[in-house]
Image (cartoon, rainbow, N blue to C red; front, side, top):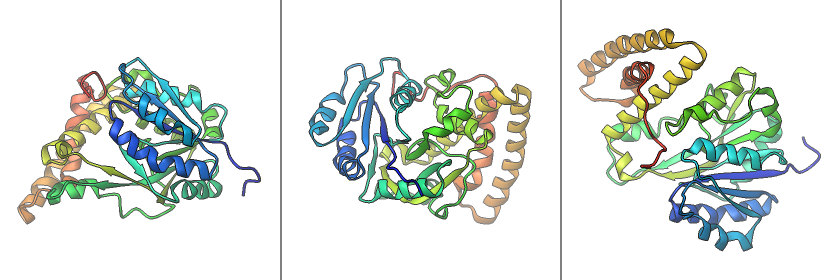
Length: 300
């Protein structure tokens, strides 16, 4: 156990979601006050749409408001990393997530048990009424993960990072070459795991995230899986080269295609968990050929 209370910074990247940010801060300021944590909100909107929301909550807590004019969440995340340099712990929370009482305490318990590990909190998605089984299967697929289960990868939404582990990286920042495509968090976590840092799942440090109707369709889910494949392709080219990525993509398409056909012959019921390998392979090939997807650029 740690003898001193860790200096905790909760970092929130935001872009034109003032209503969602207000909902997040409503409960988060209480959690932060209980544990003497600080909050920083970094706004990527040139019109500073988050400023009034932060200013209205500032009287309740130690909340800082920063702006980042360069488009792309990668620059926002790096601004948060710089703000966390004098802290022991950084926790990333997305601006469309909502925390609940006990959230920060659960994170800090896990930090005490695993002081040199990344701790990935559970994300419980709130789907629109009537979302079909295909969409639900995709968004709810991680809920069976056990508490304290080691993970191979994770994103930065609801993620605790001990600042001490960043010394294991040659460049302790998110890679700006990922630009507005996204995937900088996948790359960042991958580099940490390659340096020997574990990822531990925290089932009780959960947040809720509301999925808008535009993202709760089969088409949107398939596009998301393909884009994840494109991001993995870019990561693969960075470490293994283009030929290996293209070969891996073709192999996934072949194996995934056979799995998909066999599944459909038996059930006639499409499943994103079965289609995943095939669609990820498509993303690998598309990404390996140099096509990019602007997920966080001007039209967000």
